[in-house]
Image (cartoon, rainbow, N blue to C red; front, side, top):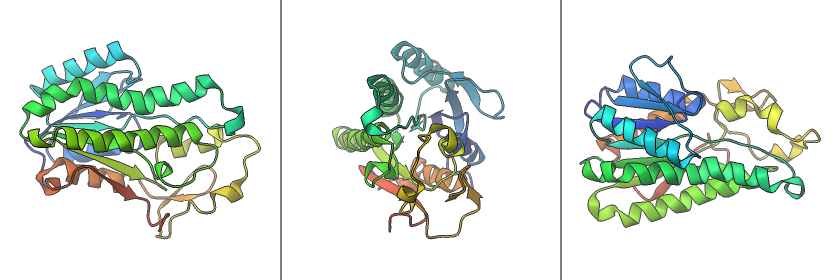
Length: 252
C-alpha cells in the first residue's frame, strides 16, 4: 500500500521510538520524508536527515525552511519530538518545568508556526501532534509532562478550527503503554523513591509484545505509526480537531 506516494512529510523526533517507527512507516507508504532529530541521524535509508532542536527558534526556522526547500513544499507535519523529566511535584525546579514545556509544547508550536505557510499551500495539509494519555489521565511524578501534553491537545483544537476553511487538518495522537525512547529510559527518570503501586492503573488490558525497563507491558511503536500513516493519507480526510488514544485499553 502506497497511500502517501505524493506526500511530502517532515517528522520531528525521528531518531528513536515512535518518531522513528513513524518515519519508517511513512517511507514504506511512499512518502518523501525529512527526518529531523536534535542529535541528527543518518540510519534511516530513504529519508533526508535533518539536525534540528525544536526548542530553539533559530534552529526551527532554519530547519523547517531547509525541509521545505528539500521537499519542494510540505503536505504533512508530524510533531513527535518530546522529552520526559520527572520528579515529585513539590521538588520540581522551575528549570525542569520550563525545559519540558520548551521542548514538548513550545517546540510543537515553533515547528508548526514555521511550517504553516507551506502546509496551507498544499492541497493535503495535515498536522499530527503528539500528546499523551497523561493529558487526560493521572500519571504520577509527571506534572510538567502532563501539562505540556494537555497544552498540545488544546493547541491542536485551536489550530484545527482556525485553519479549517483553508483545508488544513490537525489531530493529536495520545499514546499510552507504547514502547518509546521515554519508556525505554523509565528507570532513569523516575524518582529514587518511586511508588510503583501508583502505576497500577496505567497498564493495558490487551496482550502486548514488549516491556519497559521496569517490567510494565507495552506495545511496539509501530502500532502508533500505522495510525499516523492513516491520518496523513486521504483515509483520514474527515478527521480533525480531535485526539486519538492508542493505549491498548489502559484507560477503558
